[in-house]
Length: 399
Image 1 (cartoon, rainbow, N blue to C red):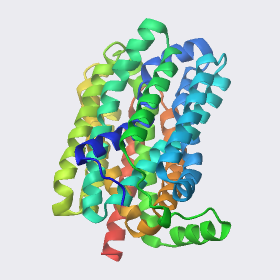
Image 2 (cartoon, one colour):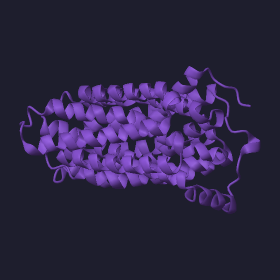
Image 3 (spheres, helix red, strand yellow):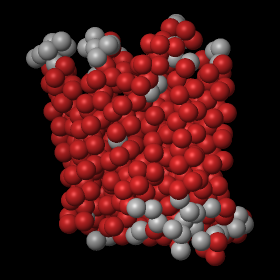
Image 4 (cartoon, one colour):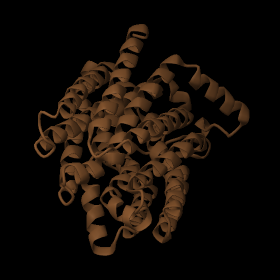
């Protein structure tokens, strides 16, 4: 058995590794206007692709990182992925065109898939059931601190050294994670439990995953939930800046909504053992659908001008982040629960599907930005309603 860290340090370490994803996305948000001005002045909406390109690369590599983690161990994959992430960061630092920057962001995403997937498998190696859901929830709770702080850090670097300096900050963040992991935590996957990379085994595992109806239902629900988050992240900076003229205060407002998301994750960690994962997910999706429809109606009706509607936008954004705290961690635990014997492959396949699908679903909603938050709010409302119907029906059929 691997040596177990104190639970608080284990949660902090897993969250830190996974936060490489959040830091690489959210710290970029204050820099999107500068990137658009420097590399895409004729089509400023294209700067959003800096976010979605990263997520797309991450989704593709996620498909392979799990099997590699099952074969060679979790720590090896985290370390190798981080090295690729660092290479992508240096390429982004020197990029002279938006196209080159997007290629570098895809490479960053390819690398970050290891630190994203392996910690989930590490949690599954050591815990199961509602205890796993509770640990996952607390990991996501700490993880949510990074979105709260990242825009401030990003703006600090941008103001002092320009948007390119962010990529050097990403390198430093990654190196700290690698030093912590490799000096403090033993490998969590026993050698006897490793699955060699054989086409027959991968095929059998893949077929087991995609033919498990419960796994696929929750993977689809995760795709819709992640699509909600992608849509928000890709267009939120433009909405704050262009619709509400909150350019300088954007990091503070974004931090506030991220901290409210943290509150949702904390509350989920308290409630999930008593109420169960599916019930909380259903409540969160249902509430988000109702609130999104109501807010969209208010925006479209024009009963309040845009300057006066900023508090309503802030409320809606905070409410979405709060519900994300109930949605993603629980759906991840529900999806992986039947796959403990192939946790790495299971995490890879299901998260790759949900990430790529989430980008394909949420990206167009973000690009539909028309100077108002209406496309985003309405799009999230539709996704939440579909997710509510899906999980509610699954709960009835698979109690």
